[in-house]
Image (cartoon, rainbow, N blue to C red):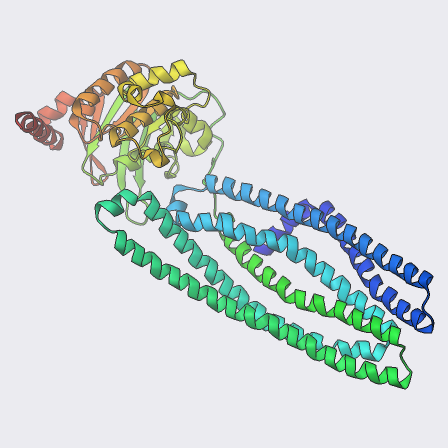
Length: 579
């Protein structure tokens, strides 16, 4: 499907509205073309003798035509512009829904600010295309054709001469239209880059200030802004040349027609009233030709924006299911990896992982930074798609389980905590929207967050700012833990979820989780041995491979990486106590 075909699909949804709008456009054009005829007839009648009744009669005719035209103008604007707003609403909703369905790798390749630009500026440009541009294009064509027919009835030769300007206008439209399209797309692309830069600076304002990068970022933004202004100037230069050129072409046509028409009046082959009607029709013909430039401008802008939106809409959504191994039955909270090898590119991150976690067991995963711990967890929830037949939940390959169903039985506390700019209560309810106040209070206590909540001005109803900016790292992690617990999942994955809390708070949370872990399958990824020492099974990852596995005491006795890490962390704790 091309961008144009997609756009036609949206127009097809509201074909009844657009058809009714077209009828109103025809009505407005018909009564607009009736007015010059009324004026010309009035001139000829009044030349032979002015009478009060004739003046009143033609005035009423003219006012009546203007009023009916006004009604049709109002209706076609209301209907067509309304349809364009509905199309914009549909496109915005579908664009947002599509963004929600896209896989993680898509967001690694595309900037947030650019996506925001497409969802706002580009959608507005498309709305202008399917509303005002379509409406005025149809109206202009009707008026041009109708005016030419009426002019032909008066003087065919003059009417044909008046058309000589159309090829010149068409050539100018083609020449400038293509360049306007290219430059507008360039402007929109650069605006997306500016939006991305602003979004990154606002989100990372603490880092910018901590490293005193304010002046550098201001300078970088100023350079981007200047480039944006320059690109807009180039676009404005085209449009500023385009419209005056159209006006000058139309003006030359008027001069020629006035000269030839005046000679016909002098020769008696055309009446004054007919000449007046002809020139008024010429004016009706001229305005749509001028408006055509504006319509082409809107069309080029709208299609450039539609192509930018189409680039996102054709991106493949995350894979739902493959095969029919999952029949919808209740899945046991068990996880198994069979010969898993996975990489984000050509280089594997995980190698030959064979691991089984039975129902009710707790698995601890430790290892150096970059050893693949978080990647292993993300494959269970299908944030990243594992190779077929390598990751199983409840004995079923995860690629055969719908992601929504799979994730509904898993509670995840990610390594990088993300909180919404809402209250603590609503951030916890992200885990389960129907959680009661009593359930919230219980999970807040389990996550070791009750003292912090009690100290806040509005307790659990305190708004925590964008991305939880008013909370410390430890408070964010504990809020995320509460969010996972309230889900009451069969499987819990804690991906380095206690790294930002002190050892005393960690011990308190782990003590609460020991009670909670009963009957659940739990995966704990950690750098601190204290977080995983009570696990039923511990594995050590190094460069994507399992190099050690066993219980805490077994691994200490083996004297390998785990034992070395344990000794170093014990020494660090002793030094901290001495200090």
